Amino acid sequence: HPEDTRITVYGGDGQPRSVGAGTLAVIAGPCSVENREQIVSVARKIQQAGAGFLRGGAFKPRTSPYSFQGLGCEGLDLLMEAKRETGLPVVTELMAIHQLEVFDGVDIIQIGARNMQNFTLLRELGRCRKPVLLKRGLASTVSELLMAAEYIMAGGNENIILCERGIRSFDNYTRNTLDLSAVPFLKKKSHLPVIVDPSHGTGINWLVPAMAKAAVAAGADGLIIEVHNDPENALSDGEQSLTPEEFSSLMDSIGKYAAME
Ligand code: PEP
Ligand code: MN
Image (cartoon, rainbow, N blue to C red; front, side, top):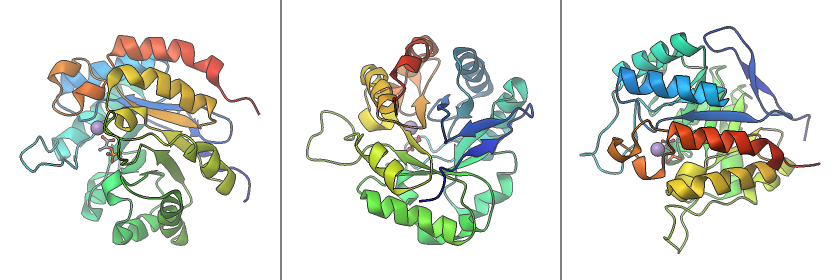
């Protein structure tokens, strides 16, 4: 395949931040944006710990229609506020194409596991030029993930980040089974950056640091990690979220696991 792709975004402060081709990109933040205080304080803390990108869901693909669905447009406004306060580029999930109208300030569009094979959506994303973080489907093979990326690239948008976030297996001691051999495999087959989500990959907060380090050792170009200021009272995915303090100690220890060529 051609040279490894590097994707660069500029955030709110005009500073370049890259994913791919030799950098380690760390995206962190809560599963869902819940209120101003939460998103701004988490953004500040993950930035202090060394994260380069802020994540936070405004439109949430919840299993139950009675669970918290995200703050929608208000959540996006709060993300923009956190971006202004910190300069961090923002990553958030798009669930339907009409939401693009309100995604102007979003730096990287996340396509969640449940939409990985929404081919109409993928084709539309091919027509825009914003970077797309494409998560592996809950029960999708690695070649289906690559073909999903191909749908976006076929339209001319090659700014895609692949994300291994765990798949369904027979064992349920973890929420999903994190398939770390997908990382070197995808990197061999594709020029696209590959990142790992150990939060959804395990579903258990104390397993996150070990799997984050393992992902980096396996050659991942980055991580996406859920961090919450009060995990016990989080409106989604609290059980797999790190506190800012736990995230900070993970960041302190991560560099030495970087894969050696
Ligand atoms: C998320 O990142 O919060 C999320 C819903 O992820 P996934 O699509 O991988 O389940
Ligand atoms: Mn989540």
